Length: 454
Ligand code: NAD
Image (cartoon, rainbow, N blue to C red; front, side, top):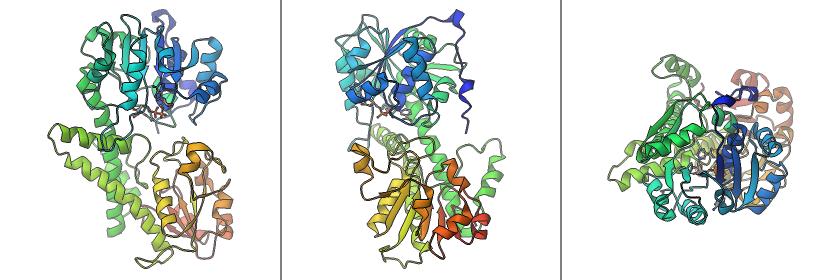
């Protein structure tokens, strides 16, 4: 991982700095990080959400999501007075010179991005935008959406630019302040440069291009990253078939500088709030313009198959013949978030596996350090049917199979000897993240099955 300590945060040299009054619409993973980091850089930010409770909590400095370093930058913004929280998009836009749209673009019924939230937010800010304001689309949106926002705004005096965000959940603050690049898509170059100036001092190359290219860059980046994971998962499946070891294969191919090791870690399949919807949107955008993106379809298919392969490992571990159910099998699951460092459950491969295990008759007892044992609201709905417990010990006690589904570092430190005493006899660890040392697990008296490992 590229993440560094929070002390590495890059601060702008104050003498070359022109603070801007910014509005941020949406206080989720992207919007809250954007708002707090822009305030950290010295800008004056009003960050708004439609969720009143979220805004109330943020005003008190309470962070509604798990994200390293976010509490610190929000607290800093609140105490300096440079960061305030309001309800409703109009409140963010009214006094702003630059307004960032950071609202969801979920998958629509046809596989493409649903632009409803973007269009609603644009309609809400249109009447209050100052003359000459700049509207920045940070949400991930299909080609042509910059124009679509212009059409909704009906404000010829306001420029709209695309500025896709590349932060990763879990290291969002670090990534925002230490980007590999800033991408800006603008028809009017001076509007793009105006936004680029806000990021001056971030020590990152600023790529200014046209809106269609900027919008394509975001989907191409996520599509490529998803492809790398699907590729290594397919290689892992091959390793299992031929008796090779994927760890060694990745080391061997990764040493080639044209390939590299980054993002070549086998696992249970990619998930989260971005890759699944963005990969499907990429296929849909291509199809809309007459291109059949068969390669991306394959990437998605491999990913769906990978999750099924993980469930098949559990079935195999308990010696089930095809077609037989898992009734009576106790399965402990470690990790529900789609990856370590976040509490985000959206499209988590862990949840896909858990649903399939429960549907097959298994009793699933799961622990995740970010999931409350008595969740409320939307989380309670998503987690219905899972017995949530508060520790690794509880998840493992009496289980026949223990599935490591999220790579939380604490799971790598499990006391294996104790684990063997807690689980049933002849129990199996299905390590979908290759987190544990297979030999050490076996030495503790447990069976082990990883991904692509001999
Ligand atoms: P999110 O669901 O965490 O947050 C979106 C927020 O917007 C919510 O709190 C919601 O209440 C609020 N909102 C919706 N409509 C609003 C309105 N009209 N006015 C004010 N607030 C409104 O979403 P996110 O994960 O931050 O993603 C936002 C966008 O950024 C998406 O397009 C996503 O694809 C993209 N993106 C996400 C990530 C990521 O890692 N999460 C990374 C890069 C890009």
